[in-house]
Amino acid sequence: MHASSRFQGRSAGLGLALLSAFAFGGSGVAAKPLIEAGLDPLHVVWLRVAGAAVIMLPVAWHHRNLVRERPALLAGFGLFAVAGVQAFYFASISRIPVGVALLVEYLAPALVLGWVRFVQRRPVTRAAAVGVVLAVGGLACVVEIWAGLGFDLLGLLLALGAACCQVGYFVLSDHGGQDGRSGDGAEPPHPVGVIAYGLIVGAAVLTVVARPWGMDWALLGGSAGMNGDEVPAWLLLGWIVLLATVLAYVTGVVSVRMLSPQVAGVVACLEAVIATGLAWVLLGEHLSAPQLIGGCVVLAGAFIAQSAAPKPPSGPVAAGAGTGAVAGPVEGELSHGRAPQ
Image 1 (cartoon, rainbow, N blue to C red):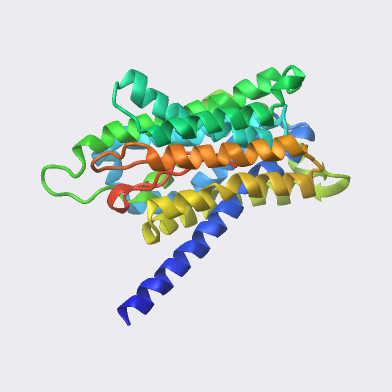
Image 2 (image 1 turned 90 degrees about the horizontal axis):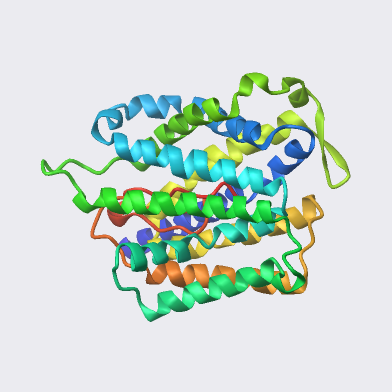
């Protein structure tokens, strides 16, 4: 009976992880038509984060003790995993294909290992180094470097900025986890509560940066083109807020608690595949054979680098993807500062 219950729990966790990957993978596909219809990328990010923050307000109130107990963690999640990653990612997809932007973000695990090796001066395994080489080599194929960087250079730099924001949250959460549980034996912060406050902090930061009072609100009452078809703008916005943010984050956190971090990391790699596939079908963004092969190499390198990375002794560990690749929580604490795929 116990084995059967464990199997059912892992099956449910896998189902939630797949749902989270699909939800995250669709955000760029829904956002790009809004951007092309005339909305500024920062305004789309603000709408996404602010809308999700409003929905998560009851959760934030339930976990209001986090403001007093872990203010640095909440600020870090809001600044890096929410505001930074989302803003850079949405700005990048306004200039380069969704799939390419997301694959660039999957350099985050490699960049984290660089931080560990050259800044913290901690050793990394040979497998981790191989993962870094694979990720960088695969990225060269994705951007077709032999063609002289035909992609928009600024778009690539913006996508790299999203990856760097994920690294910043990796480093912050690893540092914050050094103390693990507090000396009085207090429980680690509830991950859904951290997500709720991260969205609130992110919305506050983005309000200052995006200045939504200057947004053309009338665009939300119109429609946006999606590969030749007209889709109501409000429907795309609802997709971004409800599915690609609230549902994606919550199911992602719950799935990591039900699965091992390694399994969750494998499933997280599907986000890039899903995003690329959806962009192909819904936006008509076709990638060449070398780009597809390079994308597979990037994902393989990201997974190897992630699984071989040194693990902190306790405390929250977060990653991207977007989001990006996931690093699961130690003792089920916090997952994950995902990329906004």
